[in-house]
Every structure is written in C-alpha cells, then in structure tokens.
Length: 174
Image (cartoon, rainbow, N blue to C red; front, top):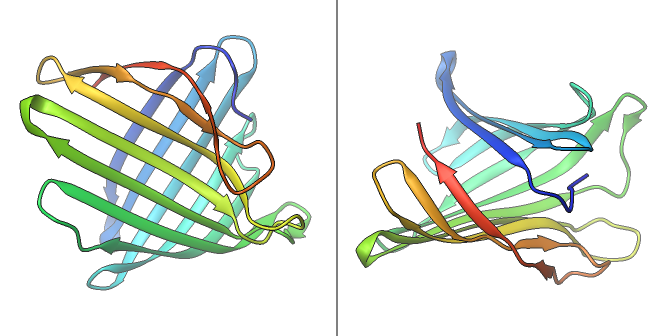
C-alpha cells in the first residue's frame, strides 16, 4: 500500500473519554490514493494497554486488529513501545495468517538530534516471519516546530529483514 513517490503524512494524537488514547495518520500519495491507520489504546495495568487498530488503504475501513501494547522501561531520553496484534478481521471475517508484532522507538541526543523508528513483522505469515513495513527518521530540530533529516523506508522483500529505500524527511509540528 505504500508508494514509491513523495507523500504527505498527517499525524494526530488525541484523548477520548474513559482514558482511551488515540492516534491516527494518513499518507496522501500524489497519484495512488491514500493509506492510513488509527490506533486506540486503553490502559489495563501500569505499562500494558488493550489496543484496537484500523487500517485504511484507499477505503475508510479495510481491517481491524485487536491486541495489546506495552511501554518498555528505558533510560531517560529514550522510549520503546511494543505491540502484538494477533486478531485481524475484515469484511469477510477473521483474517488467517495475520498476527503483527510492531515497535516504536525514540532516542534523543544532544543538540536537538533524534532518531525515531517504527516497524512491524507479520509473525503468522504462511512463509514464516515476514517484515511488512517501517521507517527510520534520523532528524535534527532546526526550530521548535521543524525537523529535517534522513528518512529511509524499511520495506518488505519477502523475509524477516527489511530492505532500505533511501529518503529525506521534513516534519512540521503544529
């Protein structure tokens, strides 16, 4: 679902009633439509949350996943979140051969440098563990709301290890 062209990505984080935290993004491709994800999380115990995730590839609702996420204890200036999403449902019912293990990490360095990364594996693929998609963003904050940097995509080539597609990123935070 990801395009080889440039894209615009909108990210949104929000809080809903009952302590539910949400995040959504949508990528707009110049020629190939859009792709998005929405995640809703409700804390169960201190570092573990119930997670519901919806995928939106050129349609409002394609599939919905259920699972848990957890914040891993890390040194100051770093963060690591892991999620396991073993159940996926689409308009035809439960999707077999889908169970995603994903991560999000951030490392902060002096002089306003950061590394952000996310990615996921399908750990129930018919062909064994399969990398699906991710990104790395080695960036420098050049102002309070603007980051620029190296932003390669980590794409699938059919096995558990990603293939790197080079990229440059520019982020504006509102």
